[in-house]
Image (tube, rainbow, N blue to C red; front, side, top):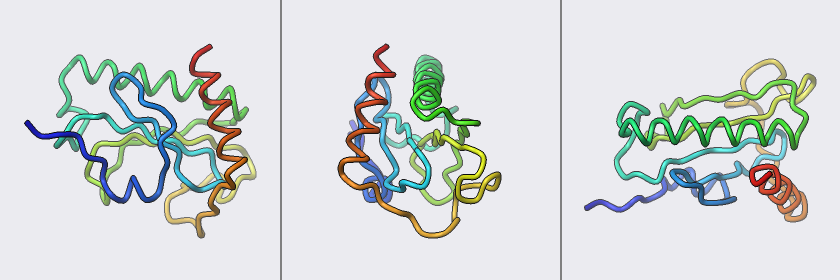
Length: 136
C-alpha cells in the first residue's frame, strides 16, 4: 500500500498548521495574502473525482470550514478557492483571503511578484487565530 507523501514543492512553499480529518492544512509562506492549502492525505490522487465519494464530501466540508474561518480571521472581501494543479499534480486546494487593495487586486495571486515570507511572530499569530476560529 502506498503511503501519503507531500509533494516537495508544497513542502518547500508552505508550513503545516494542523492535520484535519482528511487533509493537511498548510500556510503558504507568502505574507502578502493569507493563503492556505488543503492537501488530502491520500496517495496518488490528482483530481477531486479520484477521491472516494466519502472523501469528496469530507473535502468539501473541510474546505468550507477553513474558508469560513479564514474569512472570520482576516475580514476578507472575498475568499478564493481553487484546485488547479498544473504544476503540482498532487491534489491540493488553495483557500486565499483577498481584500480590495491587496497586491494585484483583483487579479490572481499566482505569478505576481516575489513572495514575502512571514516573520515567525506573524505566522504564529495567524496560526493561533485560525486554530481558534476552526475550533469555535
